[in-house]
Image (cartoon, rainbow, N blue to C red):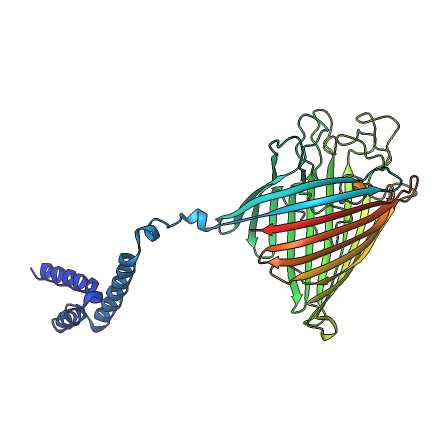
Length: 434
């Protein structure tokens, strides 16, 4: 009977505790004091019960105050762990090749949608879709890997949306990660001299980074990337290694430097890669003939150096949030000539244009000899992405509103050897991020 009495009294305590938010707090205190006086509860136990019941009552009150719409809006845990992002770019482009009797003008757009979700404490996965003009190289080819632009044409036809990336990443510790699938370029580069910003390589990559001092950090990137799959013979691959550092010289000045090495297999003596663009660029050395019967003459073993010197509010000018001076150099060790490429440039303004009146200006000059690098990776707007080219690029970005900006690009480029006609490209953009 004593045990049943204790159980009954304890149940009453919980009942009155849940009613405390509705004015029954005095009865709860009286009951707990009675239980303590009879030796059923210790003072500390009574205090603990009082706190727990007050918390439960507060939660019950908040739940009762929710509207039906609020109660139905609770999201599953996996959705709460997912981050969505996207952007839309509307572009007008004018292209003028010297001594041509016409200028090519076109309206274009690029749409990108993506998501990343945390599957477990150390595992994340992501995927994204993007527009792109279809490649014509073969029936199994997808969208152009170097551009997400789609030209407005073909009498209001539907436009293609391709898988832009799909990856999984394991991060057992903060300083180390392994990524597999199709993903953003994991190698730091101060510019897109070698690899267009639109290219998402496929394969596997590792990343290791950490600070060795308060103002000095090291990083290492490595990757094995699949260029194509062959039914017979070995597949062409790209292996890449990069080691670098970032040195915070002062709180407003930093220097970053990173050498990288790229080597390719199954290129020399093999056909031009089918995943390129369906036609030979005509710049990287190949044997005589037409696509797809051309073969690469050289292998590509390329050493690349990249560096950036950055200043926050340079010279104390608060009107200029950032000034960066950067450059890169590449050398292919296999051929005997036409093997070098370099780029120099600067960036001025906000590093990320997010709101009204944010701005940035960037200028670069580059020169890329014929066999310094494969002509399937560089920026496709820079003389159609070819090698054997040199020229200027200027870029302006100005914030019109939150996550909305106007952009302008200008390219002035020409061949180094052969036909040296100048090509001028003007691009006006409206960019919306969400």
